[in-house]
Image 1 (tube, helix red, strand yellow):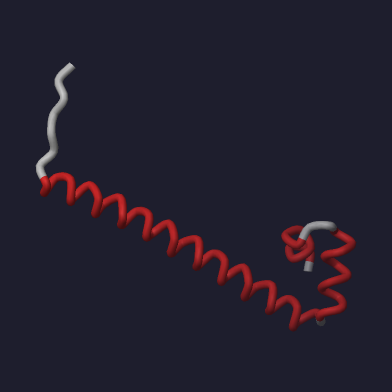
Image 2 (tube, helix red, strand yellow; image 1 turned 135 degrees about the vertical axis):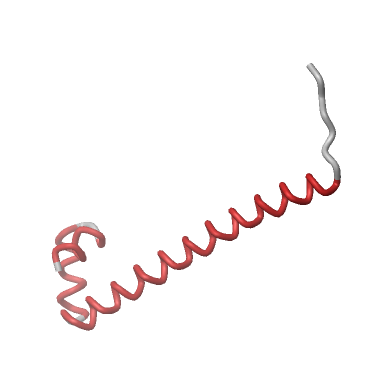
Length: 69
């Protein structure tokens, strides 16, 4: 088995690519979280806090309750 060595340029390119992918994943997670939060706030405003809370409590799942609302 032959072990090859990477030049500093190749290593830098690999690290840069991995960093870019990790950055994109973090941005996607933050965007998803903000969109979910905005949807919850919109439903809470539309149906009122008490109705929203009652529906979530009765359904047992925020996701299913929001889909029903």
